[in-house]
Length: 393
Ligand code: SF4
Ligand code: SF4
Image (cartoon, rainbow, N blue to C red; front, side, top):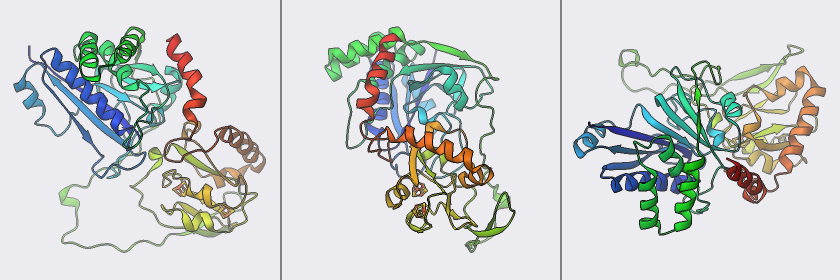
């Protein structure tokens, strides 16, 4: 019987590019060992790959050449047997830079297919973030932290072969563990890596996820205009100016919120987000001036509030703010929403400042955070917990 299989890898652009490429390439080369032809290819979200943006790589494997050619007639598969997420901070959903809405990470997983997430979180914790799917699927966790194996630095922590082992367990029809081991031994010439793949294979398991399980929040959508709705000719509309904000408590208006492209939102590109202490802000304007994404609103108080749909988490505002702990970058996984911090502050200052204190204390344990990819020292700090999880699983 002719069969076509598709695997989708979702990763952080640039930082995990080589890892993703090695995994999809590994799937195809391992499948070749079983006489199955295949192809692997990357997709950059329709624009050049940039630091941290969600990006994708695919592996297509078929039972024969003709089926593969038929499958490749599509630019990329609409449905996949497996999706692998290499950084669990992407579990909230992904957006491309050619923005067309937020996509759930399980959006392409076929009925009964498997979503594999590299994470130290539990399935229940991840399902708070992963949006619901209309069809049942399986969720498997490969214990581990997001591996930094990108274009310039390759951290060879065996994530590549562990993912291959998990894939072989979740979908042996795509590639078997024997073929994975044969590929590793022949091409990577590393028996230790073959052992890691086998261990991941033996320990990997997945739980069933039903349509009523997962994050019930609607995804931010964007309907592409039909040709009949487009304007005639070529014209570039002027940029709307924006206007003042309303104080949620006093209802007084003031400050300035620039008009932004409502359809180009960047929340899921972040691995860290800025939190602002409006009490200690000296209104120096530096964050507002230096934010490359124009993400700050001037509040009626003269302080600066981050528009969390526009912020890509680069951390420049924290770096330029002259006041200690006035802006702090915090891991995005700590948050569940993108509402205004200033509104929260205005509604209940004491609660906001207490929250800020604990949040900043958590973030500051992570010394020398690196804004593109969490923080330097991440592996040193997380390795013991990740190793323990990997040993137990
Ligand atoms: S993290 Fe970067 S994009 Fe976000 S508000 Fe700060 S400077 Fe702007
Ligand atoms: S850089 Fe810091 S002190 Fe200056 S306006 Fe921004 S938040 Fe306030």
